[in-house]
Image 1 (cartoon, rainbow, N blue to C red):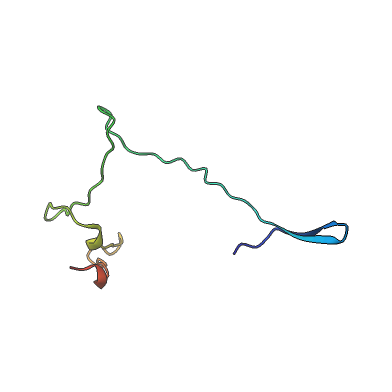
Image 2: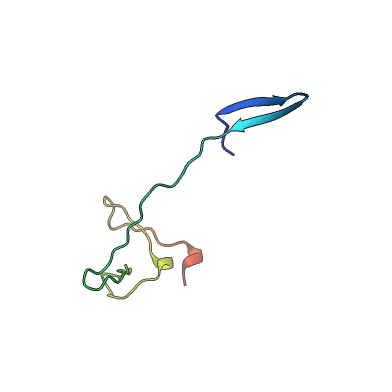
Length: 81
């Protein structure tokens, strides 16, 4: 839970009400979609294997770094078929 930025008490005669003030955040980011300039249809991004030329499911995608291109990280065992 976030910490309050101010703690205090408001008193109404014999009644005291504890108050906590928290900072508020609002999502102000803009989201863009790629569209086809000709007809306005959204562009889909598919994962295609460069060796086989076939589409690869997200569960079978690993990762690698630029410095170790030959050492790839396989997907977790739970995602393997």
